[in-house]
Length: 195
Length: 195
Length: 122
Length: 122
Ligand SMILES: Nc1ncnc2c1ncn2[C@@H]1O[C@H](COP(=O)(O)OP(=O)(O)O)[C@@H](O)[C@H]1O
Ligand SMILES: Nc1ncnc2c1ncn2[C@@H]1O[C@H](COP(=O)(O)OP(=O)(O)O)[C@@H](O)[C@H]1O
Ligand SMILES: [Mg+2]
Ligand SMILES: [Mg+2]
Ligand SMILES: [Mg+2]
Ligand SMILES: [Mg+2]
Image 1 (cartoon, rainbow over the protein chains, first blue to last red):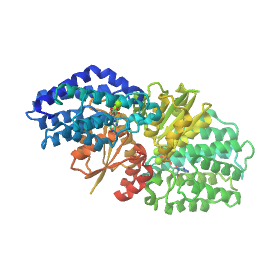
Image 2: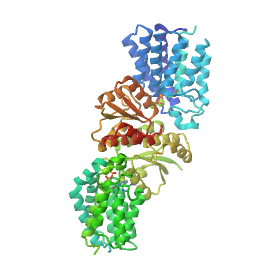
Image 3: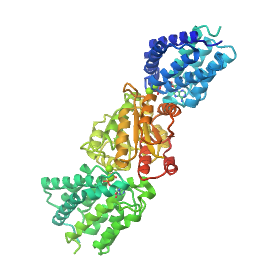
Image 4: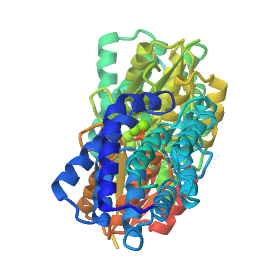
């Protein structure tokens, strides 16, 4: 369970493709409980990641994670840009000490929580990242963990981010950032890094 | 001590001329403790009053006061437009029952206070209107009353209007709306209505 | 009883911007605005406010303003208007955004007012 | 230690408007703004914020923002910046106006922060 330059590039290429394919669906999820731009935001980020990886051609894991982070930070423009960007920045920092997947994911989660100060149960991407980190640390990360975490956001009431403005009316909708984080971890699992 | 169509037209023509002449000075007073537009605001109002009185040619006191009020309300654009406008609207209403100057001025003051909810001592035009009404009701309105009221605003600390934002720093400056109200009552006295 | 939003600011750009911010989240909520003086300067205009009231398709309006003098001109327009206008002494951008998001979600006025209460700063 | 103001909003028009509102009252206070995404959409841009920080002539900045995601991007810019940036969770327009009026009157940061406290809504 370790990230390498190679599986990380595979991982992000996979994510970028899924985001492009699911752009409209993610923005649609963001419409009843947000401002309807999550898919478009992330699609800008995905295109920027592809362009940056092509241009910079990182030669080690830390450089790759940093390149990904900066593309997200500069181009996404919504809360998710700062959050995913900080996650990858913290992963880049931690990758100088270890390449172990549970540690890197835990650093990413810590970054998201530093930036957005959300805890679990607030109907955000944290509700996917947190159980994924726990499972990875226990050596039990699989697709079911990811899917369950994403689905669980549906019945939550948002208390962070734009969805918190509609209060109770946020119940019954999947959180868009949780869904996109679900895609991120699904693509991670596809690289076989958990094997 | 009664307003008539004739002395009211004289009064306002006098006021409009003074405002035009003192425009720069009034805006200058509004600069350290406001947004520097009081003279320009009132000059727009004065021009509008002249144009409206010329166009509508009111044939009674109530109509004249109402025409003046609407010109101020539509064209001044600052707090003073709503405040002077409401004062003249209330005077117009009251003039249907009485032409007595103290009653009309008291109605004007009540309008200003309804609109801006300031009381005396808050460094606003109320600090000129209130002592003027009191003096008029006692039959003692003269230039000294007006001048003293205007000067007294200098040492007050503003707690209403834009000047309230600078708190203690408002002390030591004349209130622009108090100064323009001073001109209004100076011109009123020049019509000889108090004789 | 349909509800709409009225934005009054001293500067036209602010009203245009707040409308853009809101419309992204609350595309179906009728929002009309009055910004600046009649000649495009910084200030508020009762005439412009009255036009914005008339132009709003809703039956009742939730109104938001920036500074005290905008409130005074809003209150004049309120007195001249037949349409009920509810005026909130809350942060302009944040209050209008909150109200718009809740209106879009179908929340009632009494509940919206509860959510606006912590934003009262005037 | 000269103080300036930084305005960050999801919409460029809002930042332009707030700057106009402020400049009338506080002509001498350095104000720079970052509004919207790089391609002119609704959102915030760390790059634009960094440019606004660099463009501000003041040594230290008092920063105001509209919604939570603007705050996150502001905090990223804050971490990347050498210039001290103080971030206030207050009503954007009303807070920035208050700070600007006080700065123009020569009031110190500690006192300005006291005046901003009642405007905290985030
Ligand atoms: N404070 C926060 N902490 C964690 N995640 C958050 C926070 N605020 C928002 N999010 C996540 O960001 C997603 C929205 O992203 P996006 O639509 O791109 O940004 P914006 O809300 O600025 O338009 C939400 O669905 C949620 O998962
Ligand atoms: N709430 C209020 N009650 C009474 N008078 C007020 C109030 N607010 C402001 N004023 C008066 O208005 C004057 C400022 O008028 P003006 O500069 O034309 O408006 P603005 O402040 O909107 O630019 C102040 O000097 C003060 O006398
Ligand atoms: Mg969004
Ligand atoms: Mg957005
Ligand atoms: Mg003024
Ligand atoms: Mg003004």
